[in-house]
Image 1 (cartoon, rainbow, N blue to C red):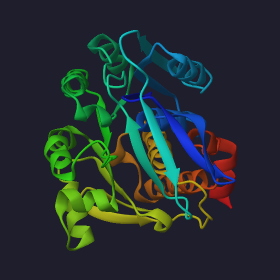
Image 2: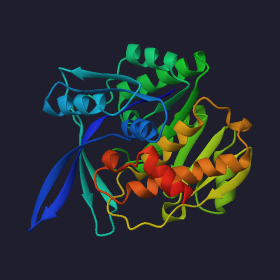
Image 3: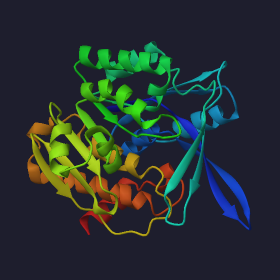
Length: 308
């Protein structure tokens, strides 16, 4: 089972109507999106997180209970608020974020929650928003140690947010957790953050040293990935994007769910390419509707597009 540990929050999706900005309340948070994407596309997945003991937290708990997850542990914190992210879209569906995250609960997950989850997982996916806070770093360190102790595969998505980190600080803080992970996902911009400019494939090979799998999402061009020092490409489908929120999470959740419980080295190259291409299509289809998790295609819809 894939279990994701990290932030769950409320995305307040801004929609301009008649000159007024209206906000739609949506469940979000990258690792929660990943868990939901894995579940919707046919895998056993779970989630561990923390929300406030407020109306937003109650909304998230209720939403998560109906998300088809095999394992769920969301505690509500009476001493912290639920994290909010204001999301605004431009004309092409690209999003920008503004986080409301002072005295909030997302990074206050307990070690007890993490320990129980790691013991049950085959793959542990760690959220990165927590790395901006001391308590979150302590938890991330604990998750890494627990994953190694229990011999679990560890996954991380860089998921850089400039509203939370300065780029220089992010690279410095993230490095430890990137080095510890078995599977890592970057965007093109994030790969440049860590490995500079220059030949793309050489940078991807450098990023993959000591890893089972490293992926780089390439937007409409699908993705690239590196296994055993070899770089491969997988294409996607052409769509008209409406909202790109959660597309990378949908891609990664679908991918992680598809390889969960399997040794990546034992997956034939052709089959792995199909798995990655299916994940690309999942991410692409997610951009065709508003609201990240609700827009993720279910297994039946995804398989139809993949096979046709």
